[in-house]
Length: 323
Ligand code: UFG
View (cartoon, rainbow, N blue to C red):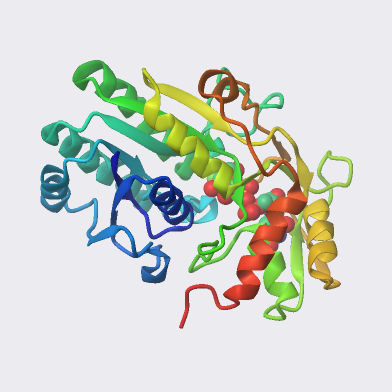
């Protein structure tokens, strides 16, 4: 298939583009490089530098390429930032996304795979979180992604857009070529690995008094290659759908740090800090629906496998995509 990967210079988009290309698909990438990196662009893909906020260019790109499907990764994704600057999140994640949808409809492109998030659920009443769990986001980031999910349903009803919305839990790990390098790194695993690389003295643990066995937050870490596989399966669904994507297992912050110690051989000193605002104590996915309906099977079942791949990439690229 010919796929337009929007946001293909970012962490998840770059690896999905790589996996699509490895499987013989034709890939074009549209990215404004605000969060992504030129060096994260797979050289086998056609690259169009452009911004979804530019309605005309977005429409023209779609009209010219006429892809079989679009994968949409371009978004701002920091919960904390969204609490300070909600406008950025509503403009970039909703308004700019509408330009993409309208350009698709005008060009007759009727299939979309959308990057959604467990942040659309807010703190759940119970785990694991399945697709029936009520969505009550507690920050503008989650709200913007939920709003876009609702817009997608209307574009299906009115324009016949076939979409799959994948709600990721904690994406982690790397491929051989591409990995996690955010301009402003807030995520636990890359921050811990920077300590192992000697770039930071310690890692902070945000909150040690949660109602969890060791007092720290529990997350469902899913390997980026397993995420990419889910996107490719999503290209063939007969109808629009929402799927939660995680491994169904949970690891606490302390467990992640301990795993990183074991794999890197570095003592990784920690400093215990107060809770980070907006962190739910426990987020674990039920991915039964995508397993049942699309036959998705994660290959990287353990945190060890996830951290090993991330560590390999960070050792190869200790400064990430910087010069
Ligand atoms: N944490 C630390 N120290 C750090 C960084 C993180 O203790 O230096 C903790 C966090 O408080 C949290 C856990 O590690 O308990 C995981 O934090 P991340 O920032 O790696 O990931 P989040 O679970 O906060 O974020 C993920 C996705 C977001 C999504 C969010 C939904 O990356 O896109 O889940 O809650 F919005």
